[in-house]
Length: 185
Image (cartoon, rainbow, N blue to C red):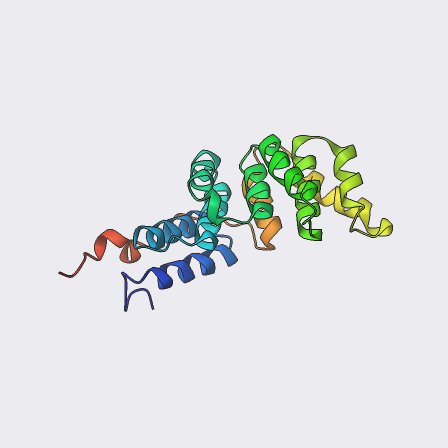
Protein backbone atom coordinates (compact mmCIF):
# COMPACT_ATOMS: atom_id res chain seq x y z
CA UNK A 1 0.00 0.00 0.00
CA UNK A 2 2.84 2.41 0.83
CA UNK A 3 4.52 1.69 -2.49
CA UNK A 4 1.25 2.39 -4.33
CA UNK A 5 0.81 5.75 -2.58
CA UNK A 6 4.16 6.60 -0.94
CA UNK A 7 3.25 10.15 0.09
CA UNK A 8 0.12 9.17 2.00
CA UNK A 9 0.72 9.95 5.71
CA UNK A 10 -2.03 7.55 6.84
CA UNK A 11 -0.35 4.64 5.04
CA UNK A 12 3.02 5.57 6.53
CA UNK A 13 1.50 5.60 10.03
CA UNK A 14 -0.14 2.21 9.39
CA UNK A 15 3.23 0.86 8.22
CA UNK A 16 4.78 2.17 11.43
CA UNK A 17 2.12 0.35 13.46
CA UNK A 18 2.84 -2.89 11.59
CA UNK A 19 6.56 -2.51 12.29
CA UNK A 20 5.78 -1.87 15.98
CA UNK A 21 3.70 -5.06 16.17
CA UNK A 22 6.68 -6.93 14.75
CA UNK A 23 9.05 -5.38 17.33
CA UNK A 24 10.97 -3.52 14.60
CA UNK A 25 11.38 -0.22 16.39
CA UNK A 26 13.94 1.43 14.11
CA UNK A 27 11.76 0.81 11.05
CA UNK A 28 8.67 1.92 12.96
CA UNK A 29 10.36 5.15 14.02
CA UNK A 30 11.26 5.93 10.41
CA UNK A 31 7.74 5.21 9.20
CA UNK A 32 6.16 7.40 11.89
CA UNK A 33 8.69 10.17 11.14
CA UNK A 34 7.72 9.94 7.46
CA UNK A 35 4.01 10.11 8.34
CA UNK A 36 4.62 13.20 10.44
CA UNK A 37 6.75 14.81 7.74
CA UNK A 38 3.84 14.27 5.36
CA UNK A 39 1.44 16.04 7.73
CA UNK A 40 0.16 13.52 10.27
CA UNK A 41 0.48 15.47 13.51
CA UNK A 42 -1.95 13.47 15.61
CA UNK A 43 -1.19 12.71 19.23
CA UNK A 44 -1.47 9.00 18.49
CA UNK A 45 1.19 9.11 15.78
CA UNK A 46 3.45 11.32 17.92
CA UNK A 47 3.14 8.91 20.86
CA UNK A 48 3.80 5.92 18.62
CA UNK A 49 6.81 7.70 17.14
CA UNK A 50 8.18 8.42 20.62
CA UNK A 51 7.68 4.79 21.73
CA UNK A 52 9.43 3.57 18.57
CA UNK A 53 12.31 5.98 19.26
CA UNK A 54 12.58 4.64 22.82
CA UNK A 55 12.54 1.06 21.57
CA UNK A 56 15.28 1.95 19.09
CA UNK A 57 17.41 3.28 21.94
CA UNK A 58 16.86 6.98 21.22
CA UNK A 59 15.21 8.19 24.40
CA UNK A 60 16.70 11.65 23.86
CA UNK A 61 14.84 12.04 20.58
CA UNK A 62 11.70 10.56 22.12
CA UNK A 63 11.73 13.19 24.87
CA UNK A 64 11.99 15.93 22.24
CA UNK A 65 9.04 14.40 20.35
CA UNK A 66 7.00 14.11 23.54
CA UNK A 67 7.71 17.70 24.51
CA UNK A 68 6.80 18.98 21.04
CA UNK A 69 3.45 17.15 21.04
CA UNK A 70 2.71 17.41 24.78
CA UNK A 71 -0.67 19.06 24.30
CA UNK A 72 -1.84 16.36 21.85
CA UNK A 73 -0.89 13.35 24.00
CA UNK A 74 -3.01 12.05 26.88
CA UNK A 75 -1.33 12.72 30.25
CA UNK A 76 -1.40 9.04 31.22
CA UNK A 77 0.44 8.08 28.04
CA UNK A 78 2.77 11.08 28.28
CA UNK A 79 3.85 10.21 31.83
CA UNK A 80 4.60 6.59 31.02
CA UNK A 81 6.42 7.50 27.81
CA UNK A 82 8.64 9.96 29.69
CA UNK A 83 9.43 7.23 32.21
CA UNK A 84 10.22 4.73 29.47
CA UNK A 85 12.46 7.32 27.78
CA UNK A 86 14.64 7.48 30.88
CA UNK A 87 12.97 10.31 32.78
CA UNK A 88 10.92 8.47 35.41
CA UNK A 89 10.92 11.45 37.79
CA UNK A 90 9.19 13.57 35.15
CA UNK A 91 6.85 10.69 34.32
CA UNK A 92 5.91 10.30 37.99
CA UNK A 93 5.28 14.05 38.22
CA UNK A 94 2.90 14.02 35.21
CA UNK A 95 1.11 10.88 36.38
CA UNK A 96 0.86 11.98 40.03
CA UNK A 97 -0.78 15.20 38.91
CA UNK A 98 -3.26 13.19 36.86
CA UNK A 99 -4.06 10.92 39.81
CA UNK A 100 -4.51 13.93 42.11
CA UNK A 101 -6.87 15.57 39.62
CA UNK A 102 -9.49 12.97 40.49
CA UNK A 103 -9.72 11.76 36.91
CA UNK A 104 -7.42 8.77 37.40
CA UNK A 105 -8.21 5.50 35.69
CA UNK A 106 -6.71 2.08 36.35
CA UNK A 107 -4.43 2.72 33.37
CA UNK A 108 -3.16 5.96 34.91
CA UNK A 109 -2.56 4.31 38.28
CA UNK A 110 -0.72 1.36 36.71
CA UNK A 111 1.38 3.70 34.55
CA UNK A 112 2.28 5.57 37.73
CA UNK A 113 3.11 2.33 39.52
CA UNK A 114 5.39 1.23 36.67
CA UNK A 115 7.00 4.67 36.59
CA UNK A 116 7.74 4.36 40.30
CA UNK A 117 9.35 0.98 39.55
CA UNK A 118 11.48 2.49 36.79
CA UNK A 119 12.53 5.18 39.27
CA UNK A 120 13.54 2.48 41.73
CA UNK A 121 10.83 3.28 44.27
CA UNK A 122 9.51 -0.27 44.62
CA UNK A 123 7.50 0.43 47.75
CA UNK A 124 5.47 3.15 46.01
CA UNK A 125 5.20 0.95 42.90
CA UNK A 126 3.73 -1.91 44.93
CA UNK A 127 1.32 0.36 46.82
CA UNK A 128 0.03 2.01 43.66
CA UNK A 129 -0.20 -1.27 41.72
CA UNK A 130 -2.21 -2.79 44.58
CA UNK A 131 -4.99 -0.31 43.81
CA UNK A 132 -5.96 -2.34 40.74
CA UNK A 133 -4.03 -5.63 40.79
CA UNK A 134 -5.40 -8.52 42.86
CA UNK A 135 -3.13 -9.43 45.79
CA UNK A 136 -2.39 -12.91 44.39
CA UNK A 137 -1.07 -11.32 41.15
CA UNK A 138 0.89 -8.43 42.64
CA UNK A 139 4.14 -10.36 43.11
CA UNK A 140 4.10 -11.46 39.47
CA UNK A 141 3.50 -7.87 38.32
CA UNK A 142 6.45 -6.63 40.37
CA UNK A 143 8.61 -9.46 39.03
CA UNK A 144 7.69 -8.61 35.44
CA UNK A 145 8.52 -4.97 35.99
CA UNK A 146 11.83 -5.83 37.67
CA UNK A 147 12.94 -7.67 34.53
CA UNK A 148 12.72 -4.50 32.45
CA UNK A 149 13.59 -1.88 35.08
CA UNK A 150 17.29 -2.49 34.50
CA UNK A 151 19.02 0.59 33.00
CA UNK A 152 19.54 0.24 29.26
CA UNK A 153 16.64 -2.17 28.69
CA UNK A 154 14.65 0.35 26.64
CA UNK A 155 13.80 -2.05 23.83
CA UNK A 156 12.68 -4.72 26.29
CA UNK A 157 10.48 -2.21 28.14
CA UNK A 158 8.67 -1.12 25.01
CA UNK A 159 8.41 -4.68 23.69
CA UNK A 160 6.99 -5.87 27.03
CA UNK A 161 4.56 -2.96 27.22
CA UNK A 162 3.24 -3.63 23.71
CA UNK A 163 3.48 -7.44 23.99
CA UNK A 164 5.64 -7.65 20.88
CA UNK A 165 8.77 -9.72 20.21
CA UNK A 166 12.30 -8.46 20.72
CA UNK A 167 13.97 -8.50 17.31
CA UNK A 168 16.99 -7.01 15.62
CA UNK A 169 16.00 -4.36 13.10
CA UNK A 170 18.31 -3.09 10.40
CA UNK A 171 15.80 -0.45 9.36
CA UNK A 172 13.21 0.18 6.74
CA UNK A 173 13.90 -1.19 3.22
CA UNK A 174 15.40 1.45 0.94
CA UNK A 175 12.55 1.17 -1.59
CA UNK A 176 10.18 2.54 1.06
CA UNK A 177 12.37 5.53 1.93
CA UNK A 178 10.39 8.74 1.66
CA UNK A 179 13.23 10.52 -0.14
CA UNK A 180 12.85 8.00 -2.98
CA UNK A 181 9.34 9.33 -3.62
CA UNK A 182 9.51 12.99 -4.53
CA UNK A 183 6.55 15.31 -4.35
CA UNK A 184 4.62 15.43 -7.62
CA UNK A 185 4.11 19.03 -8.71
